[in-house]
Image (cartoon, rainbow, N blue to C red; front, side, top):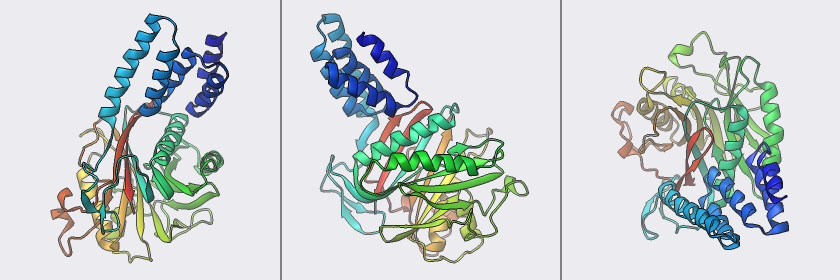
Length: 376
């Protein structure tokens, strides 16, 4: 009977639904097999602390030695994963660094939550994904970030995170509005999720920000990559509204500007004047192995992120997918220009004064997500 109920929970389509089902079942029966199933679900999400808790519960509740041994092996495995994938950047609570607003601040102790923040999601992808799997990974990442933060903030996802394939993206971002706003309503504070949505086989490249109130901002790409000229349908300029909405939204007294991938290059190359923006959010599509597609992650950081920051004198955050290649450890997902008249060609990662306060990894169906949280 218990195993049948566990399997019914496991067949549910999303991790949130599976965990809710298993949690209710566990509260009813307090059975070791249910605890073990919950732990497996948490482990699959990369939530190693919760997985460890329920593997330990399972070990205590299992009556037979062979099951206790299985649980003990799982406990050892999860502890090792936790050491590898989850860590805070600050080595010492007394260490100091320049935070994302360019001022000096003390690193927070492990377990202490960050207030007023931006989180970037960098994905290492196998290339096998769907809108459903990306949707699930998005909710998973937001949950992880919410556990490590307090107050209002933004979770930034890559460009083309969802795809309408041959269709126009409008129906897809309307569908996403309903599900994302409903999900975000579980939080008392205001968490904004920003992601890219493509349509008509990437002819349409949009970026959309959602809160629990619905759509906060929408932007269409206004500056194409060299190979996209004549193919991508562009916005008339960087302030053109999309579906009657601006690409700018406000949070915590700061103005955020949405970029669709190569738009950050356009800010510098077109010498666009800053319309009062404090933060740029760049949704970058992806980097591939050399010879397999766009692979210039260093070039993008130098001339896209750093170039836009130099032009507008503001923070630039970026999220991207690394397809079938490892995430370069030093690749920056937040840049602030403080190099004066220096050329972006000569800019180096070591010139960037910004470091995340917290960094952790999480396993997804598609691969591995590296999440960085920056304190504003």
